Length: 111
Image (cartoon, rainbow, N blue to C red):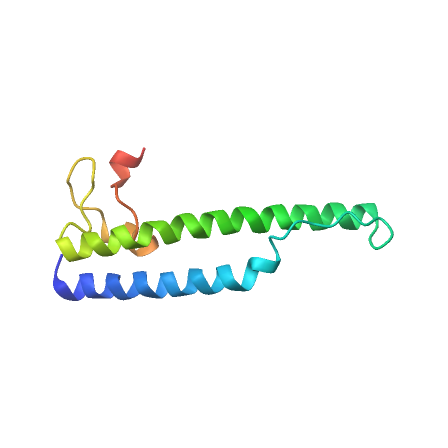
């Protein structure tokens, strides 16, 4: 992989990190537990709010997981190992890395 390609992936990873951190900051109120004050909200509204909070918590979990993968992807760029499968050492298809530059395995080794 040439240096301009790895530079573009470095920029994409840094942009992704900034975007995920912003989303995490914006959505921190959505993951708060739902209060069960029956005088303030009806039962169905509470259920909807609880489901929304659970969905927000899962989205937050996925963002944090993605954020945790970015430093190692950046380290692989610096070491020259970026774009190589950790299992078989073959090149990972560029299209796959464009979908998610934190992938560490090729399609063969993922399945």
